Picture 1 (cartoon, rainbow, N blue to C red):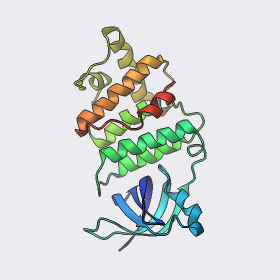
Picture 2 (picture 1 turned 90 degrees about the vertical axis):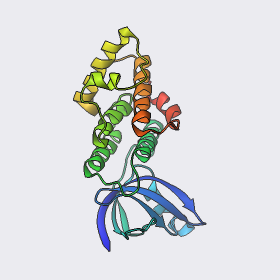
Picture 3 (picture 1 turned 120 degrees about the vertical axis):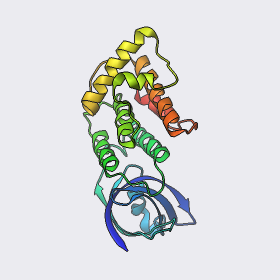
Amino acid sequence: MLYKTKGIVLSYIRYKETSIICKIFTRELGLKTYLINGVRSQKSKSKIALYQPMTILEMVVYNKENSGLQRISEVKINRANQLIPFDFKRTGLALFMTEVISRSIFENYQNENLYDFLEESIGKLDKKETSLGHFPLVFLIENAKYLGFAPATASEFLSENTGQPFTGDEIITTENFIQKLIEEKYSCQYKVNLFLRRKLLDHLLDFYIQQLENNQSWKSMAILRQVLD
């Protein structure tokens, strides 16, 4: 059966000489894996651009139950990103987003609210005025809400993590900072020194590891530390 849906590209791997296997988080059908033939051939060079991480697509897809690999009938870009593909920091943050989502959801997982949040976040990341230094912190805090394990208050974001990297003097400042991030989201301009922002990032990523019960290290950490300047 054919379905029309929007989707956000998470990642792809090469398959045979000209094809790819692509993970796409769709709004209506959830996380799906698609086999896309011929997209890497010389005649189809431009088409591979459709499947870069955090690209938003409009698709007509086949959806067969109990089938691991699905097929795409029609596809086009919903909105072309203007800054993300050409700005090193924004590209790094897009890869960070894909890593977080890929480790947080499973095949066929469907959550329209999470999808809408991701689409909104991509739009924010692609705007020049968005503060990149605060972006990964806001993303982790907000994303946890849609995944269902976000604490109710700023203080609980600190207390519910079994690790506690902050000194007594830092806790109040950090709690105020988290509250501002919760209230103002991607518009937050609250000033906090680089050292504390990096400690909060480590704290939130450790919190995710505990919630997801996944002890793998974060591959995008090197890029993130350059963004948090």
